[in-house]
Picture (cartoon, rainbow, N blue to C red):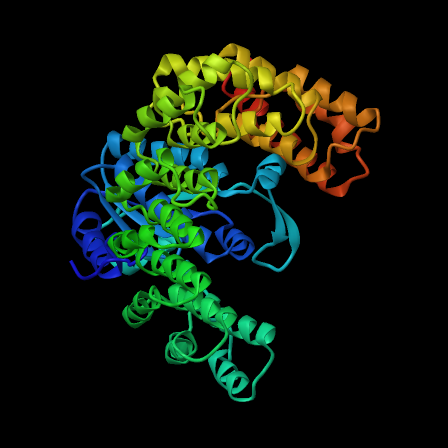
Length: 536
């Protein structure tokens, strides 16, 4: 099939349109629209290369979670899945849980500790954005007049088709002038990479001229990465020829550019570069094999993770780390046993990287490793492939970690956000108790988590939070608003319990949220009275 998204290899828009028509509009299947919440700020913050890896990994998870069903990639971070039945719905939810559990691996250690990033959102406001999650919208063709267009509109298919086209004037004419006039290297580099970020196909010939011209290696390596971002067939041809560049930095960027532009198809093209004399090039290949999702390259990663780098001047540990990072990004369950062997070997180095890779891959091998240590939940832990008994043991560790200081509590919350079984009574009790300890975004995340798991508030929850705010503690207005939204949604307390400490707060957002919660709680009570039921 020629209609394939180059990033994920999944069917593209023509195939999606056909499947929607065939299976949803004229069939009995359901379409599910999936996108990544606040992906654009993440992409801007960390760069397109890592952003593309997140998208590629989500595509892999969706394919594996709903086998036999249709999975298409609209573009950007937007996907469509089509299927039917309870197994399809469960597969979508499993995909969501898996994505949540592996997402921390795409962040730096500092940002994992914070639980997200501080950057500009879509509206241009600088704020804190939690770790990535996915939004899921179900759309059924529930009447005979339903068209593909109306179905697409309901699911939001067209939401991001124009993403990146809001710039009125292209960058590449300015780049051409900069090259003609001998603009400074640093400023020209910025223009080159701006063409790549905006994916301006009109820049391809100019960038090729830089890549293969008599320019400094600084400009050539920027051109290589920009061509990778643009990613059409001509750009990939230019990048393949640049693998022979005399400068290792240019070769490194060419490897990275091919991974960005071609996905798993880049694997066979970059594999020979493992023989390159530069450790930077080889590390780019090892990481790129994982980021590209080229599963056939595992043999190279395994060899690099256990072998010694050529030459005494090259750091074997760093090359092994790159290989282990590649294995982690592949995320294949069958690799877990190999990683577990490395973790259990007393003389293997770097053991910390092997253990991290194991936790990213998941399965019971990773669960056993964490349970045996019996300390805290690691900041990256893929829960896929773990037995129910091991999940329960991990749940105990995570529940205990909720009382710890950040970042341990952040990792525990992340574990529960990706945890699919019903919470135990111990976990329920620990969460309620920690409404008395957490503040700000951690408090908000705990409340949202409890709401998502259908846990209702009780008088102890109100008492704990009221006591804190009455004593002058600063929990945060948005956190308190989320708390009151949970109370309104799930009930469990009386309207009057919100009067003193919440409705009469000076904070307008908190008071307004309390008013809405009181209305919801009272309406629920009065409906029960009208129906002759006893108020709980």
